[in-house]
Length: 237
Image (cartoon, rainbow, N blue to C red; front, side):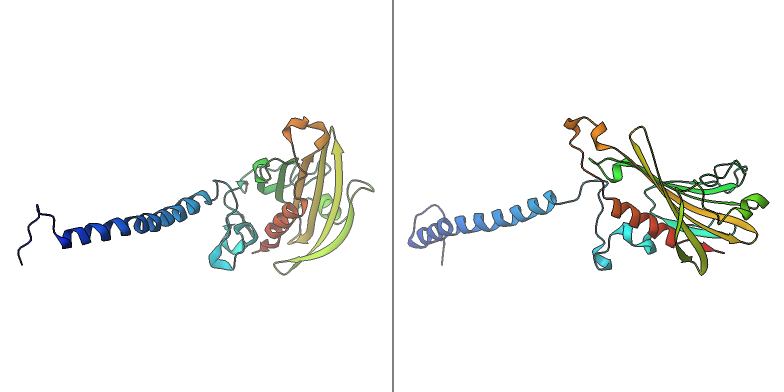
């Protein structure tokens, strides 16, 4: 059959009618698909937010030490930490008196420092949190290792096993100029040295900030849990 394209016929009318009827449905279908794509893009997490690892039963990266970076540069121990936090590996550093809090001016080595920045808990009174690993073989440091510091403010609250080694856990709080400091210290005697794994959570008094900041109390349990997860990865080599 010869088709005359410039001639109106019954089948050209039928084809035009079919296209006219189908166009709204085609437009509606592709509109739905476009809406789904836009919605998915709009739900994408912002940079710096915690993303759930769907391939690991929904556990977040910060609760899954298996996914972390492991520091093995220091002779005698290893420790893991989230790679997006600032850290300092001071295994070649000279002795100093800040190898642990309240070292009573006794020298030791501060081997490792990890810092959780304010941005980890935005729009809250969280300031930062710092974890350190230090040790000293000084005779006085060793003899005082398991004695509470800070007078009556520090207390041995519990014990913990890290990498098969027994540690005593000390806790104390400090405050000053509208700032609060909550410190947890894990201490043990190992190979003739006093080891101290300590973390301090620093926050500010909300009342000291302008009300226009609209700050909320930070999630203390979240920060404590993260720090404890880091401590739990510590192992003597």
